[in-house]
Amino acid sequence: MSMYVTFDKQLELRDVADGAETSTAAETGLAFDPLEAGDFKAIIYVTARASTGTVSIAIETDATEGFGGSPVSVGSVTIPVSTIGVFEIPLSSSQIAGLDPDAAAIRVKATLGGTTPSVTYGAYLVPAVR
Image (cartoon, rainbow, N blue to C red):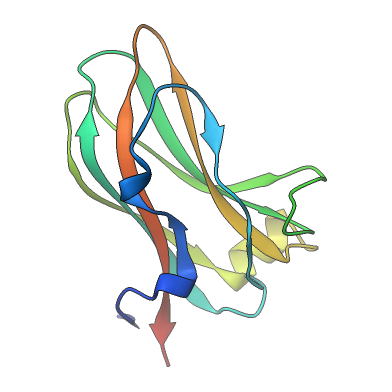
């Protein structure tokens, strides 16, 4: 069983104070070497979710912080309608290396669809304590 560190502002992928997303949107990439991070997870905390539409939140990696290449989804979670709470996406260097061997940056992306979707969420990374 791994233990994880607590919230670190430098590993924040999205501030919940940014408000609701009502369409698909990717956040700014964070320079983070997931290939050297060992075991870690993304914490997604949802404070509001519409009772319609679909919402999936993914963690993506890319070779550059600007995400100008072809982002790779390395994990995701679907947020059920009208659900608030905390969701975790377990990640590891070995898993990401198999999916994106050039990964050097990470970001969160919310994909929304259907009729009047909406989600208010925050996201951050927590590395395992060694």
